[in-house]
Length: 564
Image: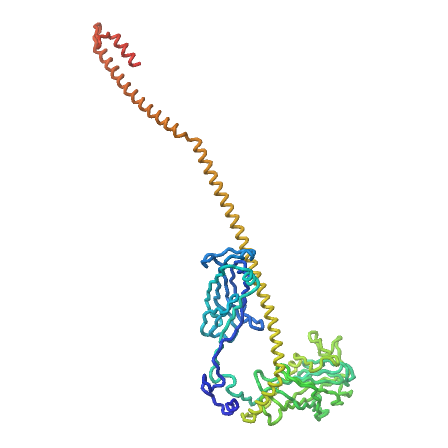
């Protein structure tokens, strides 16, 4: 059915059983954030952005999580404890919040939500789904937790375990017509190739000796092109790399033959026009480069002549490519690359350094014979010596034969690479688990540092509060003592109630006595005034008998006595 679909290039209706490329989107795990519960064991609060880690330990964003220990009403704050064992047998109440996430890097950022389990809960707790695509989704999750009694098991869980917050999301559906696999990618008419050449030569004239990278100069030729230095009477090896334009699936997979020839000097004098084959010792793909190792031993004996020493020569390197991935070639692809070499009788040296090397690039590698089997290329040197070449391929048709070949090749390569792929995936999983473990330990250390600083600040604040309360209590005691002393002094200075009553009674008696004396004084004054009036009315020489038959003398005496 898939081959028929490729031949007919028919597009079935989307979201239908006949569409082999559509499936309903499902939530995928973006990453996990870990909140270590040690602050709850100290009845302390926590609020921070936690990193969201994927299975390889890479950070995919951050999650805002906070926990606040409270009283039973989940309003009043609880007092922190320095020793977690103080919680044994005591209730624990706290409120957990999952506010939002930020800086999500995953493609699965549609309809995100968070899931987690506390302690041994069977049913996970879920936040609300943040609908739509968002790299900073908001969840606004708030949940109160009540532990009636903290036992040994719960205390151990709080001290040594962590809450794992799983962040889930969906990927966006690919627009119709751009889904991968909806059509076979057609190859371009013109292919771009970048061919680089490097030379290793023997350190001595003996073929089995060690190898060293040839020295090179950036502008040694007449046209200002770089060239490699080679020494006469030495065995050589060619390192050839072929790279292509980026993001192409039609890559080089095999070269059948390599030739080297058309030897000429820089004055275009041909020394040898023939092309001689060189042996391909090894070829393989390394990343985006396809590399070949070719042996160059006895070709072009004219280069060992004395007349060739000190001259710059050009050679043409021809590469015959017979296989390109996903393509059936009717004709082979021929690539040609000019190689410039400067022939020297002895290895050139300048100030103890081989010619063409500068202080920064003086570290030419020496490859020991029998060590480092395989192609030992230098990517930086090959990149500097690359030359661009285009090859016209023409128009391509998708045929049934091409589809069958591609399917067979895909199947065989999948079977051949299954073991390698499994090993690679296992290796990546091991590295990811190690990285994840390292990140978790680092995050745990960071959270414990924040908790330690928080408990220290809380201890200092508690000590200050206790000292302030003690001083306030002392001030109150002193004020109470002062009031008590004043009361005592007042009581000591004030008379008793009985004495006060006696004094009041004596005062009233004195007031009444004074009134009586005032009346008596008024009466006597009246009598005195009467006596004076009578004296004034009595004529001189006569006698006046006072009232009561008394003489005036007796009457004055009597009045005087009364006055006294």
